[in-house]
Amino acid sequence: MTKLLETFYGDLSKLKLNQFPCGTGNWRLEEDPGYVDYHKGEVNQETLFSLEELAHSEVFNVKSDWSDDITSLRQLAIKKPQVISEQFIFQHFTTLRLVDRNINEVDRGLLKFTNLQELSLTGNCLKSVVGAHLPKSLTVLQLFANKFTDLTDLTINPPPNLQHLGVGYNRLTDLTSYISPYYWPNLLSLDLSHNKIGHVMPTLQALSQLHSLRNLSLISNPITLAPGYRGCTLDMVPQLQILDDVSISDDDRLHFTHISKEAVEWDQAILTVNFPVLENLRQPPENEALDEANFYFPIQKKFDYLIRFRFVCDVNVEKSRSETEQREKLQGTVPSIQVSLTPDIATDNLIRPTTPASREIEEVTAPSDEDPISVGDVFETEAVAWENNLQFLKPVIVKCSNLTELEEFLNGEVQFTVVERVIESFTAIAPPDPSSPTPTPSGQKKKGGKDDKKKKKEDTGSKILKDKDGNVLKWVDRSPTFNEIANIKVDLKSLLSVGMTTGKTECTVTEKPPAVTPQPEDGRQSAASAKGGKGGKKGGNKKKVATPVPVTPPEPLRMEYKLERVRWKNLQDCKVWCQTGDGATTTNQTITSAPL
Image (cartoon, rainbow, N blue to C red; front, side, top):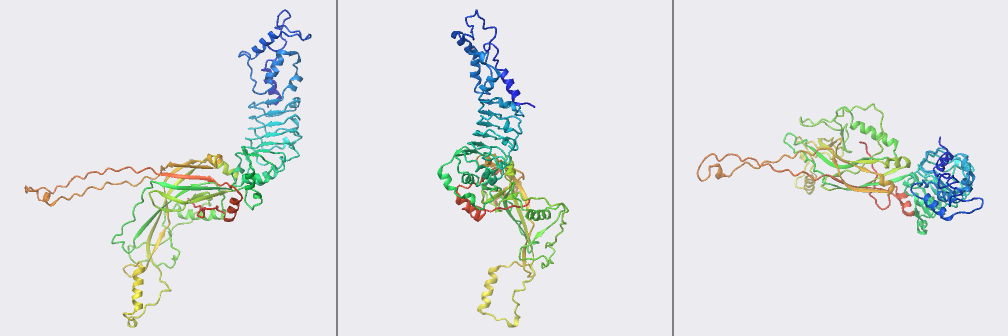
């Protein structure tokens, strides 16, 4: 273990206060013109000047950045070396900056510095500091970048006149037990930046008791991710003049008056994820052509596109379990065909077509025995039909109440995946509709009536799909299949610093587009060439060689994205979010989550 006093003695020995030109060495001879008789107080000024100049030369240069009092101490060691003693040295120092010295204990020897006002122990291995071991004259204490998890020991008889306390870059999570005016009655400045403080209300309630506090820094703490963090701080700690290195104006206070009284989940962060445009999306294959064998039971495919990503968020356990079960059904390891029917069709009422070309409707997927896995942190945009430049108008809103976990997640990156959703539909015989009218016997039909003409017009406009036997057909959708087309990875660190990250990036293609086969030119020739031309020569029916058509490579797929943390600018923003739950002015903001 390295104690503070041991480190100080080591640095003090490097000042060479007893070596030339300092101290009372044998170089101060009585015959020498520079001799100083300390009993008489006579000093040769010329010799003193030369000694001071020599003390600042490169040869005798010593490290003096660990205190502002080193230069004056060395000058005294030259001019009046007789006053230099251990007690004098301890009383002489008013500042100590012992940075990166591997100190892990502050012992009681620090109390010898009776005039010490500023102490910096940044970058050491301290886990605790006892307040009773600090000089009572201390006004500035810097404990950055150590290993503090709480400050309980520091509250044991701390310096009563402390005005600034810096404990940033540590592992503090809670302040309620050691932030009190009883311990820090004169504290003007408090730096808690880069810790793990993640609860808004308990933290601000403790800080509001420090009536002398004027400067507060909570930069890079999880609570700063909450949308109402700044407004609630200004409202609950009105004595502040500077918050997170930004001055507070009267207008700022006015905008957030009484915001802390709103019924808000203060520890919840809100983020919006937007995809303004997806450029150069390849065109999907056309629907399958209907052939004669499958005319009455055709198949069609519907293609649409979405963007999927994984993000830390609040997970609804019940919803997550049901989505997981659905995902396991849709993506079981056993090859299967599973059909999802339209709402107006029931499985039991479907009549199997007798035509050999029809599709059978059956479910062969066996339930999975695996435990459900939570997938509540997978989000996706709405599915949009294909366009060359695809636009997703509805942003995805992500909410997370674990601010500490969210901060760790934002220190990494997120992957956005472009997904093609394919829904294959086929026709099946629909059950008879009990509400349809009973057909009238042929002998009772009235021809030429107005009602009969109207029915014919309605039947013509409805265009009901029927097979050759006259059975009414309904479209049945299979379970959708998802194909990953491309993806990009986006760094999220700027969301912590500036609250937003945006850009347009070329995607990494994960699925190769279908190969384009060049179409050969028409091989037919003119009638004159077929007959041999004017000369009557035969052999004019030779086919021309097909000229290959050059294939232009497609433009790279580019995705434009924008991620932003929601931050309330005034009390009105807070009220709107409380009322609507999903944003102020945009009514199309929706939150969606779906299993992979």
